[in-house]
Image 1 (cartoon, one colour):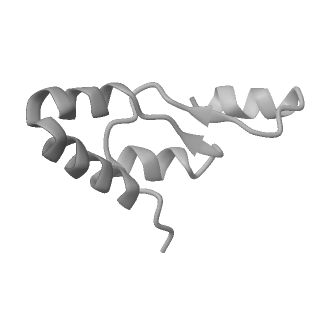
Image 2: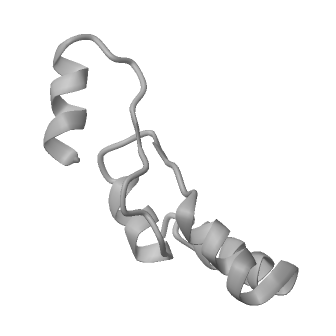
Image 3: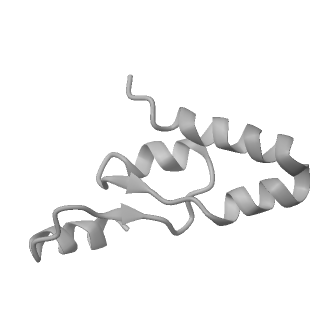
Length: 70
């Protein structure tokens, strides 16, 4: 994904987000090193399916932790 984002920027893309394989805070943190955003879909659907609204909320909190820059 990193190479694809670099290629997009070479062609003039001002913003690029990555969304394949992003399922935890570490993934989010890694993606944000080179992209403007992380897109999460399947991980949240699975959290809802497996844990209901509480599971979804917990997964969302965990993912948001990856956006905190130290």
